[in-house]
Length: 250
Image 1 (tube, rainbow, N blue to C red):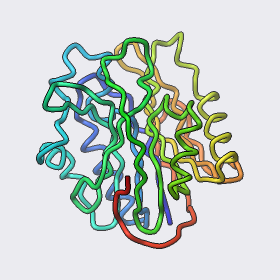
Image 2 (image 1 turned 180 degrees about the vertical axis):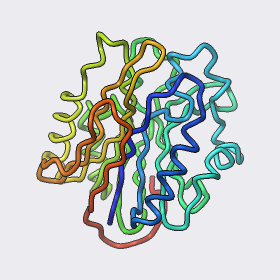
Image 3 (image 1 turned 60 degrees about the vertical axis):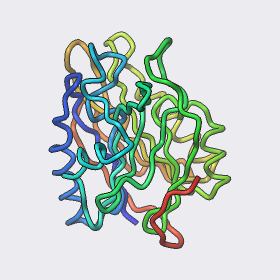
Image 4 (image 1 turned 90 degrees about the vertical axis):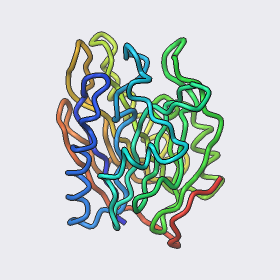
């Protein structure tokens, strides 16, 4: 199965421009046989911790609001993992990733370890795995990758691949983290015998910078694909799969 990681541009806070950018990538994936496209953490709107009013772009995953926002990404052949800020009916915020399959959200992952002190995000408490096109996979968001027990748990539930939506848009003095991310990905792959696919943002905006750490690692720790720094880019690789059945499992 072909999978892809989209190293998207680092956009201004609150921007939903990414929907059109991702749609272009979905169309490319459709014509090139890619089955799963992973996009960065909080690609819709940016990280709420840096926003003046994150509720202006936060999305309620109940009802149909999220599906309506993601509707332009609907595809019969490409499933997209999209990061966004989720707001609940009680006003709580989560750093979440949606698995968007054939026009429907088949599952969500909420970041378990918000990555800055006193983050306005609440911590998630579930570690679901998903199945699409024969691939059983887990999702961890950015800082969660630094907690190897999460990957181990998902592997124990049958995951053979791990997608890592990431947003390393940071102040310049803290932004040199790509090498660390790569070493984490290699260790996760080798220690758990899994494919690791990371999608980061890249570029500069409003005093923030992300060099980009997107990459695809095989279960032996080999780097199959690595995006160029400070560049918008789509990287693609083939991963091994088993029995097909698109569903979410908890």
